[in-house]
Image (cartoon, rainbow, N blue to C red; front, side):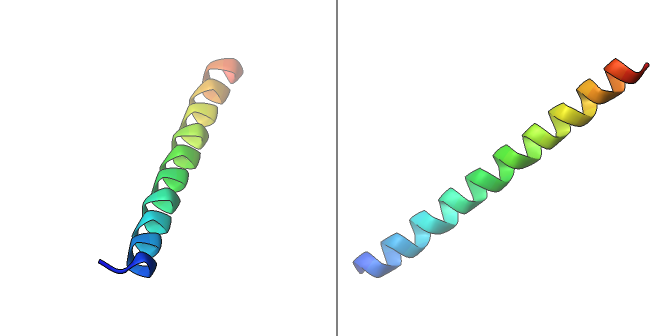
Amino acid sequence: MTPSLINFLTSIVLGALLLSLIGLVLIAISKTDRIIRY
């Protein structure tokens, strides 16, 4: 495997992890908002 390919794969993995983390945070915020409102 070439270094550029490894860098490409790691960037994709990091991007996916960041997106999933942001999604989880948004879900948690929406759930807590519902609890606070009602």
